[in-house]
Length: 115
Length: 109
Image (cartoon, rainbow over all chains, first blue to last red; front, side, top):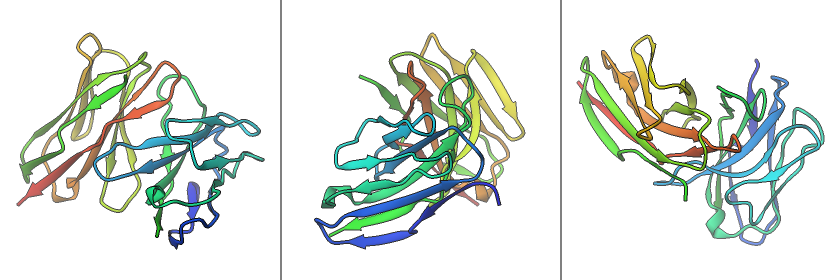
């Protein structure tokens, strides 16, 4: 089934631990994104990648890193988790990074709790 | 700074019409998106406007006025399944999406 998958679905993590959230898409989209969604706030962009081999910082990149070794995968790593990183994380992709009508498709999300 | 404003919550009756407003102030404008998000699920695309005017798609329509920095999403013949959050997002000068906090729509029988 075409789309975006994320893993894990949910995770409880001790503060200070390292964690990688996985994201894979099979639509051959060039651009991929990581967002966090917190109650009362809009989706906030953490990092993005316009094409394989390139990444960029979004609105809230601190404490997170990403890599884009190939078209399909875009993992997000928390090097040393802190409680403020408790959130729902969504991975998304789009055919291109710019241009009109560039609809983004979202994965099901990862609910992360840092204690 | 960049800002997207939409009401936090709205209530409407099944079968009725509801209009969800969105105002924006962004650095550049490359279109406005509306997404639907059911509780506990991912956002899904509803509509896209880049030119002024009304775009109709079935029971849903979206309007844009670039000079006023304003858009609305119109939902007709409301159904219980339309209970969800509706997210407004603007594509800025770098083609990054700036998101509003969303409007939670509650449909009552």
